[in-house]
Length: 557
Image (tube, rainbow, N blue to C red; front, side):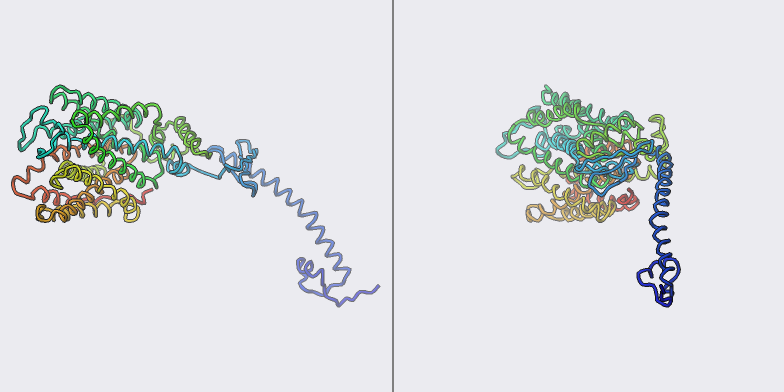
């Protein structure tokens, strides 16, 4: 049988091309032979190669898993089905997981923020920590601002049914009112003892110091309500005020160390809302209970009660556990948060501790910690600037708050409520500004806004332009509340975690000097009218200027 030797390959052309005969002229028998070799190569030789490759890949997998054994368990997907994965253990064996609702994910979490980000801000555990810590600001705001009613700066003119400290103890009014010590001695206690608790929180933990502060502060406030004379009442207020830093600072740091970095600005909204709530609750309490004793008791007892609740439910912060290398407790913390959220993931706690502490020199005692802080020029500069910001902001803010009952003549309750409610918008605007503009520009703008408003008030007559005066006063209060809130966000990020409570506690403790002076700042107006607001405006402008020497921390994480 003859074959056409000149006929080109048709069905076998592809095979010819594969073997190098690209469109060549091939006889049919030769084409058949080439086709047979092709089929043999792909149907017999390739399976052998694939099997060898699979064996080789298994050996590689075993080697890789042995190398990764020190870095913790790894999860690899092995199927397109949702929730189907293999967990590679230390022996290189695969254990399948068919949980369709909770798929295992390939994670390599070796930093605290990565772990907290995986837990999520909407995790019930994260929500519990944020809400409980923010609620402490509500409890703290009530005894802090209650002297506006308990010992008002000006006497009541009509319908005076509320029994004040001045009336019960028959205190005469003067340029320096003795009853105003109700507020001053509160911050004096914080100035004298507040830093001790912050240092203790860095050494023994956030949780024990915070719970202790709640219990003792609430008890001291309750006992002050039953004081038989002015001195015992001031002693109770002194002890109660000594825990102001603990209940407003340690809980904020604890919240920041228990949620992801991206949630810090938004957590400040929740803290601010609770502060405004506690601020505004004073008015209905004072209208319901017509005595300073009842107001003191009602604003103090919830703190004692909540301290008992936190003693049972509150966990230590994850950031503190990692910093102190408490691997077992940190693992329990992560498991608890995962269990509350209904999701599971793997992380290497020991590797996280190594990463977080690699750049941190281990401090043996408090003396070495203080030595490192005060011998670091950068930390000293940052702490000095932050201290000025805290002192000025707290003085101006507290002065505007305690004198808020005089903004609208004849309506002390409404003016006090306005002074509290005007702070509410800043807690929604500031997180956006902090993330969009950055920490430093937001702080500068807030101080400049307050400075401009306070300067205008120096030359504005409240009797001639009451509405305009009120609006500008509210703008000044808004700007100062914004600046004061930024102190917590900015300060918590600018200092290293191992010195955070010491540095922040130092700044916040010295800020009590400004708070102690705030009830007496109206003495400046006795020299000439408007001097108090002019002084506040100059100090706010100074704060805006020195903030330019601080670094931006928005992108530090």
